Image 1 (tube, rainbow, N blue to C red):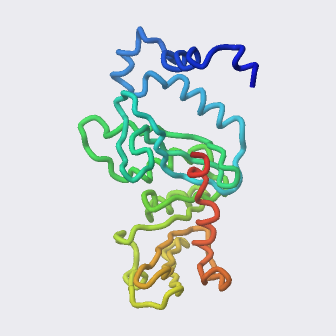
Image 2 (image 1 turned 120 degrees about the vertical axis):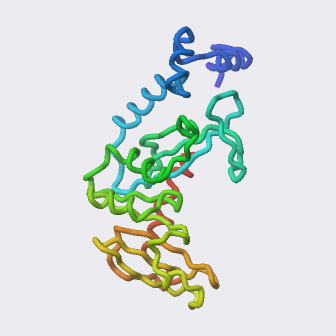
Image 3 (image 1 turned 60 degrees about the vertical axis):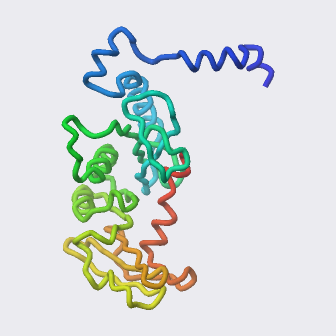
Length: 246
């Protein structure tokens, strides 16, 4: 629009975005000793506060990973070859599954001091992102990076349901659900203690898809949709929140 051209030139705008800073450069070196994201902590915290107070999410929310494309110099730039951008800032988000509105984000800054690899990272991320929505009766959807029996149990104890895909190497999966010698489009169900359910859907020959859910109690499949169980249908319906926001 003409009004923007009258405000400043394109070169001037690019120059401003190159040099703009959101913190006090005089104290940055000291703050960087405590936080790798010191240069943007203030504006990030303001953004998170505004996101939270501006919107009340639906009863379905999604947790997932995002790689924000960026090739500048930071202490926490990540290289993920499976992502289209490959280089950038890795973040975890919780989004409304219906409107795709971002509710809260966590910037991944690398391994903690000492270089020890964090265990149960997915559990910690989900519990932190869900902090403001515990005891709400909501359902959170996540992929197999986050899905564990322990996470489902912890969330259920806080009146939050969980639905997610599960990696086949998890020890809590019964061997019967991994049996590849089953009919295509067949489904097996099982329930652990406290109504934590697992189902195994044979999507392709010898390739079962394992789902973990504390939101589904019926052994139901839809013949009009490839006999897929409700766990998969709901997961496919609500999982794309972060991808769409991205």
